[in-house]
Length: 85
View 1 (cartoon, rainbow, N blue to C red):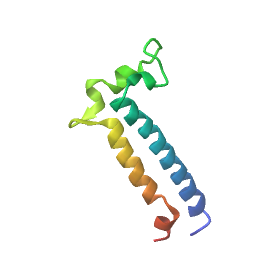
View 2: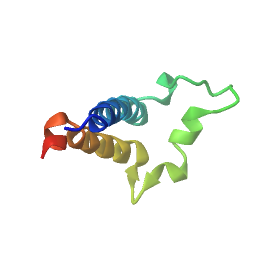
View 3: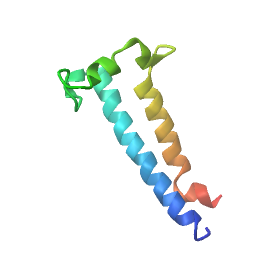
View 4: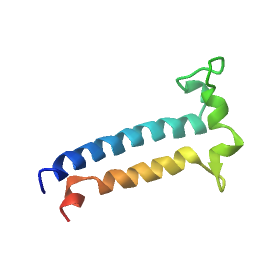
């Protein structure tokens, strides 16, 4: 692995894992209770309204689930073993 590729692979893996964390949190909030979201319904941004809106699904699949699938896949692709091949 070249000198430039090592930091890029590390950074991309960290960002992908952060995406897994956030999308897992949003998926759990979608399927359980929107009250667990960090921003309140009385705040400037109402996260519960955003995550339960009509636009929060694509073909009936919650966007949070699609994000989770994407970031889990990207985490696998960003592993050092994948960069070596």
